[in-house]
Image (tube, rainbow, N blue to C red; front, side, top):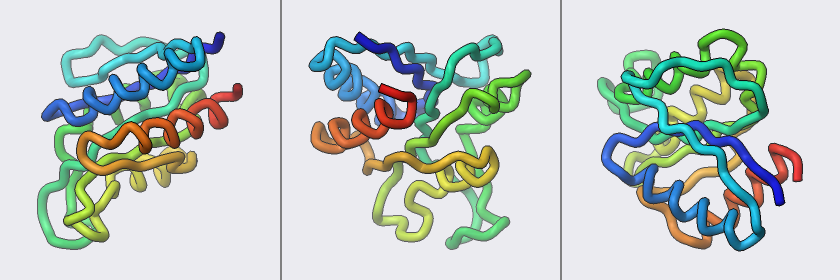
Length: 146
């Protein structure tokens, strides 16, 4: 049995729905997920083990991917990662979004990956499918060391 740490934020419930799919995958392997939903109201803590961050894409401004496009709603997660030495334990980012937005699909995850110098280890659309959860859970296990 292994335990994997995931930090995430959910605005409309899509990310929470996908987290539940990941929990089902973990249970199939007898594994557990140590999950923290991070929002503006969460009290910051020092992470003490490697983790991945799961971040939806919510943007405001512009129609492309340039600097005029501003992240909205996910800033609490970024602030939590920036707290103390939490960046030291971040190993990868998983992005969600809507493919209808073309180049902006998982743009928030891509920006987190660039900022924190970690890979995007998976992506899924909206609430994700069980197949996407299987694939991403395998990536989590590989990234966090099975």
